[in-house]
Length: 376
Image (tube, rainbow, N blue to C red):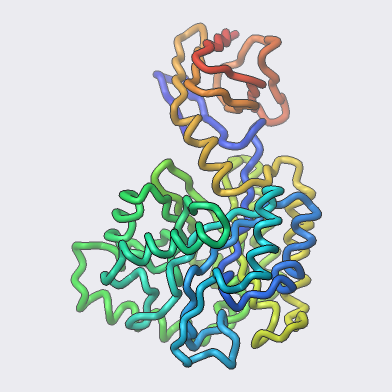
C-alpha cells in the first residue's frame, strides 16, 4: 500500500509492528468430519499459537469425492452440519478461545458440469443465505467470509456476496481471469477448461501436494484473493518441494511483509477416511511447515477476521506528507502501526525505528489524534 507525494514514498505494512500476516485455512469441514481428525492435524498448530480458519460446508451432499467417506459416496443424500453434535461442541470450544474462526464453504459442495456449485447460476442467493443460517444455528456465529468449493466462483456470485455484506475468498490466477471473463464466449472457455482438467487430473503434484500449499494473499475491504505462480505449483512434485516453496516465500516475505496463507485439507491425512493417520509423510511435511513459520520472528499469526478488521482501520487513515514532516491521523484506535519511508525521520518517543529493516512503528494512534513526524 503506497502513498506518494513527488519523490517521497510511504509504504504501509499490514501487520502490527510490520510483521507479515500468516493465516492457516483448512477446507471441507462437514457433517462427516470427526473431532479426532481436526485435533490430530491441528493440535500442534494450536500449541504454537496459530489460528485456524475452518471453511465449513453447511449442508454436505454425498458426492463421489474424497471429502465424503467411501460408504456415503454416490448415495445422493445430504447432511446438515447441525446434526454432528460432537463436532459442534468441539468447534464451539475452540471458538471461545479464538483459536479458530468459521468461514462458509459453499452450501453442499456439489459438482455441476465438472465445476463447483458456485460456478453455476441457479439458486445462488438461496444457497448463500441458507448456508449462512445453518452455520449460525450450529455455532452461534454469522460467517463473514465465503470460500467457493473447488475455487469456482463467478462474477455474479461475487456481486451477491457483496450485497450480503460477505467477503469472498477466492483464487485469482490467469486461468481464473480467463474463465470469469464476460467477454470470452462459453464455446471457447469450455474446451480450454476440459483441456486443463485432462492435463492435470492425473498429475502427481495435484493429487498429492495440491491440497497443502502456502500461497500469497491480497486483502481488500471488499474481497480477498489468493494466488500462486503456476510454475511454482507445477514444481510441487515432492515433499521437499513444498517446504522449499515455503522457504522461498519467507525470504520474499522478509522484505515485503505481505500476507501468506497455508491452505490445507484435514482429510488428506486419513486415506479413505481411516480413523487413524495414514499419510504420515505428508503429515510430517505439514508439521515441518508449522515449525518453519513458528520460528520466523516477523510472522503475525492471525485470522481472516483480525486481518480484515485491521486493514479496514488502515484504509480509513489519513497520511499527509510535506517536505518537512509526515502527519498521520486515524479515525479509529490502532496499535503498532508500521510503515517504511524513503525519508529519514527524527527520533521521537512515540515511534520506534528498526534500523535493520527501516520499519517505523507508531505504538498507539488514538481516534482523531494527529501524529506529526519530522523529517531529517
